[in-house]
Image 1 (cartoon, helix red, strand yellow):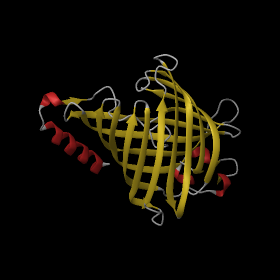
Image 2 (cartoon, one colour):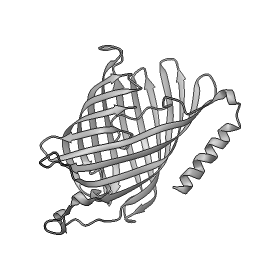
Image 3 (cartoon, rainbow, N blue to C red):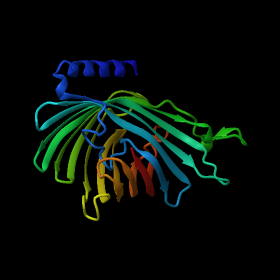
Image 4 (cartoon, rainbow, N blue to C red):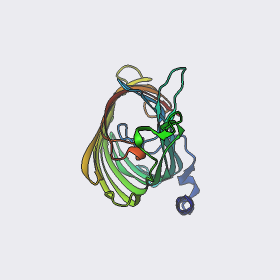
Length: 276
């Protein structure tokens, strides 16, 4: 964490050397919007799995700290990411024991170039993730961990590069992730992904926007396997700003929760997300 904060201050100090008129601190919008179907993106909401007693609670945000206008078409940004994504179980009397939780924090940088109806660029992230079982995974009556699964160490520090190309409201992207450090140490260090998202601006109204996105990620956990994520829904509010979304998600592949990193999951779910 200390290294990430130091790198962030170095980045901010470097852009501060430019003309103050070209630098905007703490802007209200993101230079590069989250990639819709990518799992590791900021969310603030719930995901209810169909036909299962599982609920996911996401509490996270990405914030641009500074925008540097390089020229009339190019914007460079520096920011930070802080997420938690949590696995809960539903029980009677409106109880939701927490089974597992993952924490992500890091810094990011983004370059976006706009040329008429076309924009392109890339987002870079340096992040840390750690995963933990919580008290809801412990069976207090029988005094044992559920399903015989005891807590295990899972953490990773990684860099991620995500270039993209956008025409009007259709954006396609590719990604490369490299694990600088990972525990367990025998996991693969590289992963690759492709995806797209589309927001149908003004299709219904300026404040009601249908959207869709798909992401496939080739992860290296002992061997390569594919994670598939598909989303379709409706955004109420500004398409690329504040509002909330109702959506359907289909996911297949390795679990997004680190304590279950080598478990396969396949589910459909209904979600709610609040965009601040």
